[in-house]
Each structure stands twice: as structure tokens, then as C-alpha cells.
Image (cartoon, rainbow, N blue to C red; front, side, top):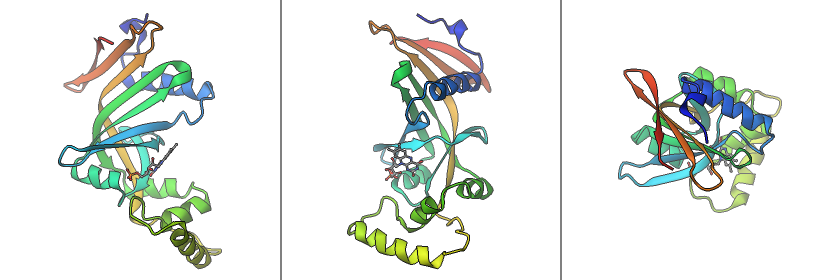
Amino acid sequence: MHLPSQMDPNPWVQFQKWYTDAVQAKIQNPEAMTLATANLKGIPSARIMLFKGVELGGLTFYTNYRSRKSKELESNPRAAVIFYWPALNRQLRIEGKIKKVPPSNSDEYWNTRPRESRLNALISPQSSLISGRKELEEKLEIITEKFQNKEIPRPAHWGGYVLIPHRFEFWLADPYRLHDRFCYVQKLKKWRIVQLAP
Ligand SMILES: Cc1cc2nc3c(=O)[nH]c(=O)nc-3n(C[C@H](O)[C@H](O)[C@H](O)COP(=O)(O)O)c2cc1C
């Protein structure tokens, strides 16, 4: 059993604590989070993304701006993410609005990526139909040749988003299913912790 008083009043501090615990527990891919989006008809879709840091007032992640998720986020800039760390028996849900990160942030992250990953991002029309892997391999060969011994610039269709939360929920498992759920909600820019039934 946990008490609301054991949670930090600031959800970002609490987030950092849990994320650090997950990293220190040597969980595989502690930064993997499920990102849920919805199109304008309200039809949802979800996929795993890698969380890249807390900056610009939220959580950042990087992707192809022409992908299915990006089309959904452009028309409906709201999203939810979930981290699940089974080894710690913890789930973390975050909901909020979405903004594109400034191009300079995307450039900065792009430049940290391995050369191969940058080339792959250049040639992959993420979420589009392809005839098969051969199509990608052919494109990769051409582009690898083109950029031999050259810098690989970030294409305009690849970059980051930031999820600016208005709600966090920290969930801790109880062996007999009386789990603890601490929810941070914002009122007049101040965070308040409320507790939900499991
Ligand atoms: C562990 C893991 C991490 C992933 N990280 C990313 C990521 O950071 N960015 C990304 O675009 N896709 C990532 N993917 C692939 C996505 O889950 C997804 O297949 C892709 O983004 C296309 O999604 P969409 O068609 O809904 O836009 C990751 C997949 C896994 C399993």
C-alpha cells in the first residue's frame, strides 16, 4: 500500500524518480513507451516509440512526419503514452497535447544518430505500402553511394514531437489487485494529486 504523501507534489520529479528506477533496474528498453493517437473520426491507433527526454515542457520522441501517427497528430494534436515496467510492477500513463519540436532540436538529435540509421530514415517512406524489402535495399544502395564521405542532412519530413502533459497517472501493483493509482491533474497551472480506484 502506498500513500499520496509518498508521491512528490511535482509530477516531473516523480517521473524522473520512476524513470531513473527503470534505468537502474536494467530493464530492456526502459525508454519504450506506447503512443496512442486518434484520427479525426476518433479511430485510435497505437505503437511503441522511444522516449528521448524531457525538454520543451514535455516528453520528446522522433519519427517520420509523413507516417500514420504523424498524420493523426497533425489533424488531432492530442496523444497518450504509456510506460510499463514489469520488473518494477509499475505503469505510467501520460496524456496531453502535441507540438512539433523546433527544427534545431530535430537537427541536434538527428546528428547524434548512427549514419546507418540516418540513411534508413532517408529512404523509408514510413507507414506507406511497399512492394517488398528489395525496394528499400535498392534505394539504400543509391543513397549510400550518394552520401559517401558526405554529411547526411536531416530531411524535412523527419523530426520530433513533444507531448505536453495535462495528466499523469502513476500505477503501482498490489499482489491481490488492490492497486494504487495516483493521478496528477492540473488546475490553474497547479498540479493536484487525486487517487483512483483500481
Ligand atoms: C522498441 C521499439 C521502439 C521504436 N521506436 C520508434 C521511434 O522512436 N520512432 C519511430 O518512428 N518508430 C519507432 N518504432 C516503430 C513504431 O512502433 C512504428 O512501427 C512506426 O513508427 C510506424 O508507426 P505508424 O505507422 O503508426 O506511424 C519502435 C518500435 C519498437 C518495437
